[in-house]
Image (cartoon, rainbow, N blue to C red; front, top):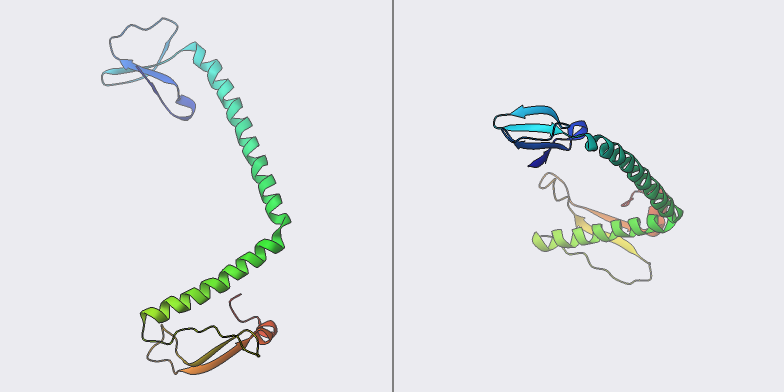
Length: 151
C-alpha cells in the first residue's frame, strides 16, 4: 500500500488489485495490477492541508518582504560593498590574466599623485594583433568627471 498522486489527486491509496478494501473507500483509478482508492477522511485532511499551505505561503511572502525592507534600509552600505567588490574583481582579473599570458603585471604603487591606473603600451587581450598598443592614465579625478571606469 502506497500513497499516490499529485496536486488535486494526491493522497490516493494504491494497493494491489484483488485486495478487499473498506466499503467507504471510493475507487479513483486503476492501472495494471493496482487499484487507487480515495477514502473519506482524506477530503477533510486535504482541506486542512490546503489551508496550512496558504498560511505557509503568506508567512514566506511576509518574511521576504521584511528581508528586502531591511536590506534596502542599508542601500548605501551595500552599494559601496558592490562597487568595492567590482574594483577588486577587475584588479584580480588583470593580475590573473597577466600572470598567464605574455603581458605586464599590474603594480600597485603609492605615489604623490594619489591612486591611479597607468597603462603603458597597453593592448586589448581579445583584439590582438589588430589592436595598436596605447598608453592610458586614469586618476580618481578623471574618473569622477567621466564615470567611465568600472561602474
